[in-house]
Each structure stands twice: as structure tokens, then as C-alpha cells.
Picture 1: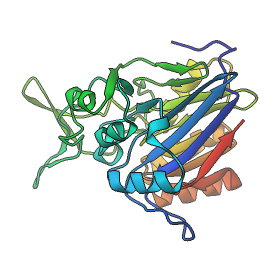
Picture 2 (picture 1 turned 60 degrees about the vertical axis):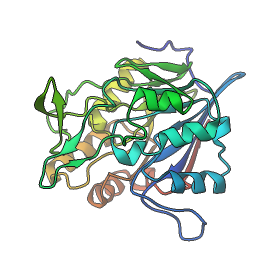
Picture 3 (picture 1 turned 45 degrees about the vertical axis):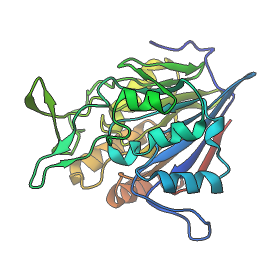
Picture 4 (picture 1 turned 180 degrees about the horizontal axis):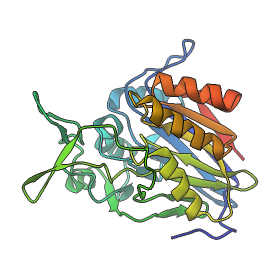
Length: 296
């Protein structure tokens, strides 16, 4: 699925609702996780959605109140992947929205068993309260589970499942799942991102953790919007603890795309942030709760 050249947004706003860090001068709370409020407009059409919800619904609710974001005004929820620090409390958010059949867009495998091997064995996927289509339906949601890119508004779509093409990007996590009763290495194929095409700017990619590899994600996004260029990447790049060679190759590849902005945090890691700042200069900035990006 690709978009036509006419499928472009006039306006995009990304507001960080949950992230690991907070500015010192605002009454906001931090948590290890990520959540973004996204507002998109095209002509007379508009869409408001939340991508991921962090891991603490009370913290998310507090920050939403302080940042003047109402659950009742959202049109959809997107879940980037199954991890608890992106999905815990999605049912609570749906209940707070007070709507029926609110779309919850994710990969078909998002509800799978997902764990770190022991000792002790630790589940790091979706919680019991959130971890089934039935639970989300009961809270007012309507799961839309697809491997494919999904258009949400002309100029805004999910990536769907991202092909793994690079040789240097790998998940970086020793995680497992179950398939027909057999233990399987989990490659996190449920990882998806959002892609916005903004008129006069180019593509803005909003990621959760980039488990598919940010270079793979950018390459895939450029294929969804032929003839467009990369304008910005916002989100987590999951380079925390990555080998120096992977960080170097990733930073070089991102720089080669010549983005105007890379705003990365959460799972990106300090060393990768340092290298991104060194390579991109003022085109790079770290994320924090309350950070706002308006692209129009």
C-alpha cells in the first residue's frame, strides 16, 4: 500500500505525554516508557490519536491533564508493539475516553506471550488487564489488527510490519514467545511506526522503540510515500546498550537521509544520543515529557 502524491497533511503536532525524563520547571511526571499525542489535519479533515500509553496509567493521566489533552477527544489509539512500557493502561485510557468502538490499531501478534528467560522468567508483554481483544472491547475499544500499512488520514498511515533488510540492525533483546507449544526466539515482528507526509516538509516518522531497526523503518516509510524525503524522526531508537559498531552504522545511515530533525529518547540510550548530536548538531534533540513538535 502506497500513498499518492496528493496525500499530504497540512499540519502535524506531536506532543510527548510520557517519557523517561521531565523538564525541571514543569509539573509533569516521568516514567520508563513512551506515549505521544498526535494531531493531524488535512484540509477540513482532522484526526487526534495517542500512540502508546507508557507503563503507568496514573502518570499518563496526570500528564494528560497538565498538558490539556482529553481522552474524550481522541479518535484512535495506535500500539507500536507489545512491551509493557508502551501498553500498560490502554484499557484504562479507552474507558476514560468513554466511547464505543474506538479503534485500537496494532499488529495481530500483539497479545502473544512475550518474556525474558529466567531466572527469574519475566513477562514483559501486555498486562492481563490489557492483553486481549476482549479486554479492549470491554473497555470501549475496537482492535484493528493488521500486518499491513493502514491509512488513517490521507498523508498519515501506519508502517505495518517492517521488512528487516540491514545487516547491522537487530533487536538487541534475548526475548522469547510460544508457538504451537514450542519455545521460539521472539523477533518482535509486531513493531510498527507511524508515518506522516506533511506538505512542503516531507516524511515525519514517529516510533515506539524501533525494534525493526530505525534504518529499516525509514527505508520502508520512503517506499510507502514515493518521491518524498525524510524530514523528521521522533521517538525511541532502541540503541541503549547496543555495540558501538551498530550505533556508528545507524547514526551514519540516519545522517545520510539528511533529516531536519531527530528527536530521540526513551530506549535510545545516552551513547547513541551523544553520537547523534555529534553527527547532526542542532538537528538532534533528546525527548522529554511535554516536548512538542509542530510541523506545517
